Image (tube, rainbow, N blue to C red; front, side, top):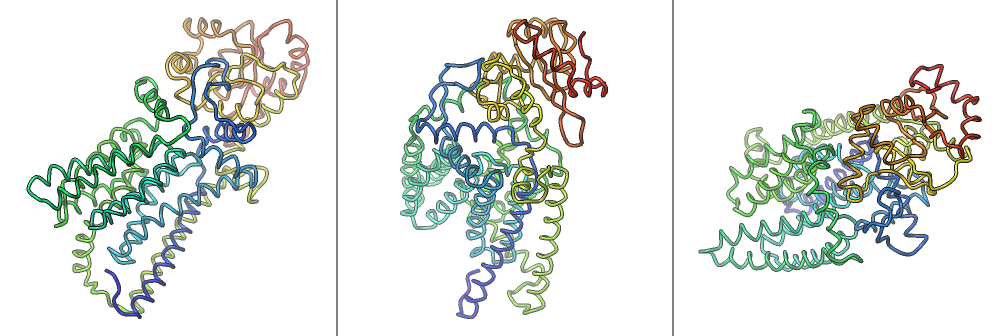
Length: 538
C-alpha cells in the first residue's frame, strides 16, 4: 500500500494530512457528547491538594466513614494534569485534555493502518474504532490508557515484523503510563499472551523462538517499569480490592457484562469484533500469538463492558497486518486497482464530509440539553460536557450559607459524592467514586440505604450511622428521611429539566434549632412543599 513514485508520495502525504484533520474533527464532535462525570470532581480536588501540599496521599482524609484507612492514589499524575488544566482553563481546559488524548489515540491508529491498508480503507477502520470508543471517552484517567495502548501496540506490531529493538521504547512508555493509569497492566498481559503464543509456535521454528525470547524479556521489563511509581507494588492494590468485591463488581455498570449495554451502543464494537475474526481467519500472516491476544481481549469485553473500548483499540492495531487480506479482497471485489482519478477521490471526499456532518449533528444535538447558564461559551461547553449544570450547585451554595458547622456526619448519595468532595472541602463525605476506599461495609450499606428505603433494616442502618445532615438527589431517600420524625427538610431545588432535584435535610438536634427555624420560613421550604415532591415531617 505504500506509494512508490514521488508524485504518489506527495499525494499520500497530503491524504495522510487531510485524513488526520478529518479524524480530529470527528473526535472533537464525539467529545461534545456529555456523559456523567461523577469521578472528575474528586480528581480535581485530589489533584489540587497534591499541587498545594506537594505530597501524595497515603490515607483517606476525604470521607468520615473510612477516615484514616490506608489509601493510595496510583493515578496521581492524571489528577495533577486535570487540576492544572482546570486551574488555567476551567472545565474547558479539562475538556481539551480529553480531546487531545483522544486525538493522539486516533492518530496512532491512523498512522499504523494507513501504510498497510491505504488511506481510504484505513480512514474507515479508524473511524469505526473511534465510534467504538465514543461511549467511553470521558474526562477520566483511562483516556491515557487508550493512547498508551494504541502507541505501544503499534510499536509491538512493527517490532514483531523484524525490528525487535523497537521494544525498548515500551519501558519509558510504561514508566509514564503507570503513573497516569493502571491500564498499563493490559499491555503487560498482552505482552505475556504474545510470549506464550510465540513460545508454543516456536518449538520447531528458530525465528519464532527468538521472537518469543524478545517478547518475554519485554514483558518482564514492562512489568518492572509498571511499578515505577511513588507507591511501588501497591500501585495495583486498589485493582485487587475492587476486583475481589463481587457486590461492587455487580453493581457498577461499567464492570457488568456486555449484555447490559444497548445494542446501538455496541454496534461499532461488534463490527470490529466480526472483522477481526474474519481477518484472522483469511490472513496468511496469522499467528497463534495474535489469536490468543485478541481472543483474550474479546472474552474480557464480553465479561466486562468497560473493556470493549480496549478491545477496539487493540483489535485494529494488532489486526492491522491481517486486515490487509480483507482489504485486498474488497479492492478486487469493487474493482479498486488504485486508480479512479479525480472522480474516485471526489466520491471519497463527499462521503467523508457527509459522515463528518452526521457526527457533528449528533455531537451538537447531544450537547444542547446540557448547556447551562454560561451558554455556548468555551467554559459553558466544558461544563456541559461534564454535566456540571446538572449537579446540585444551588444546594451546595445553600449549605455554605446556612451556618452549619464543619465536619458534619454528612450523608450523600453515591453519584454526587465526588461533587460534594470538590465543592464542600470542609465536609468529609459518606461515599464517593473511590471504590477501593469504600469496598466492603460502606459500599454495601450504601446499596441498602439506596434500594431499601423505609424498611426496618434501612431505619436501623441510618440510625447506626447517626447522620447530622443529608444532601441527596435520590428522591426515594429524601422521602424516606423526611418521613422520620427526627428529620426535617431545610432546602429543595426548584424543579427544572435535565436536573436531578437535590434535597437537603437536617437532623432535629438542639445545635441546629436556629438553622431549622430559619429554613422553615424560607422560600426553598415553601417551594418544596408546594411542589409536593417530598413529604415534610411536622
